[in-house]
Image 1 (cartoon, rainbow, N blue to C red):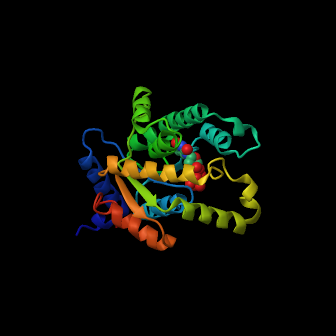
Image 2 (cartoon, rainbow, N blue to C red):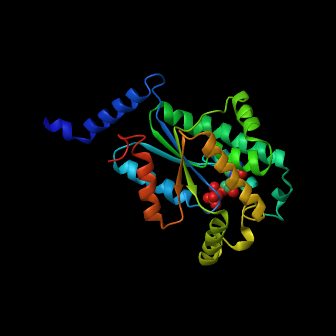
Image 3 (cartoon, rainbow, N blue to C red):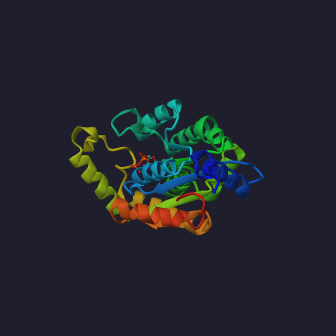
Length: 249
Ligand code: TYD
């Protein structure tokens, strides 16, 4: 083997070529989103995947919604503020519009440029969060919100979505434990508006995700997340390997 063939640059070239081969029509990178109910462990798994892909030589952008841009972080603060702060008065329509505003900014400022430069984008929550939380739990409807995204030029489906499946009650218990053990960083009194919603709300978010997984079986992979983070990460990798055999070592 030519020594140059074992260099990281050579492998990067091969990977880039494979990416191009996979999507010759748009020469775009890869968008992977993580979804799940509150406390499903998305943030940990998204971070782990980003680290593993960087170690494998990929250029990775790890981002999140709401947030991911300076303006988006301001939207995030408004959206997640618990009562009795001003955001307690957000109406469902205002809430929806702020998530859409956040997505518009995130797409244009972060996601699209990174995909155009053929990077791997990993987003901790993306469109399916809006479809499950606002579409189903708030009742706007999945189809209606897909149409709204389309009309606003915001429809960019992830290439793959890892849906971490956990009972919403278990997710909230995990959150509560984190809040109690991490002292002043997440005091219970500061739980986000969503974590303070009642059990029915969280059950309908979970139902929303179940419906989305049925509607998009090729894109959404359900990964059971009722185990420790190492075991769940093994499952995440096992879910990605058959879809993108060139992605992970
Ligand atoms: P996040 O920090 O992602 O929650 P966690 O990591 O605890 O699961 O908080 C984001 C909250 O915003 C979460 O409760 C879901 C909600 N959300 C929506 O309702 N719609 C959306 O479009 C997005 C992106 C998030």
